[in-house]
Length: 263
Image 1 (spheres, one colour):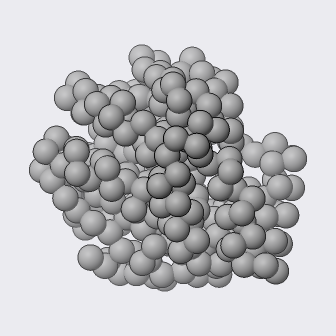
Image 2 (cartoon, rainbow, N blue to C red):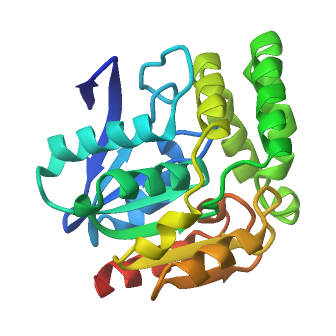
């Protein structure tokens, strides 16, 4: 389904019944990264799964996609689907950045938070430089150049030998991203605000999940969030890298199911 929002049309799916659960995908993927969650969790929640602007079937725009703007997109989607009802907001990696921005702007709309494979701190100077280099590479050489550099780091080292079908699936999803979407998201992530000071104010149930073998974001980032968010729960998932919901779907899905039932 498509929803017309300011400046673009967002594609999204809604499946299941129960508490609304918005799932925000990682960079540079799209809604297809949540396929296993769709099939398993739809009896527990009303899953609302969008393609963020520039990815999947959603329109793209030029310029930076600020995390606050992506949070506004999510708010517009939730208002259209569930009205004033609060929802559980979950995101992985970039989706986690958007989730924290959403809580900062719309805390009244949040029934719970799922923060997976993400961090609350802003990019370091080196991190910002790497984003700028990635933008330049994508602009000059296309999405293929970005994917070739990122794909070997997206999952746990073991996954590349034990689950080559998943590696191919992730590569295909990444390759489908638009150049404009990749560049816009990179620029938005580079300039995102530090959310560490926000964490102490979070007063909704929160689950933090992180892959033990994440090659992109260190476990310390998850531990820092857990220490700052009162009454949050932290789960480190063995044999999982950055895309932990795809690498260890049974653990991820059961954890989310139990979390939803606790709210």
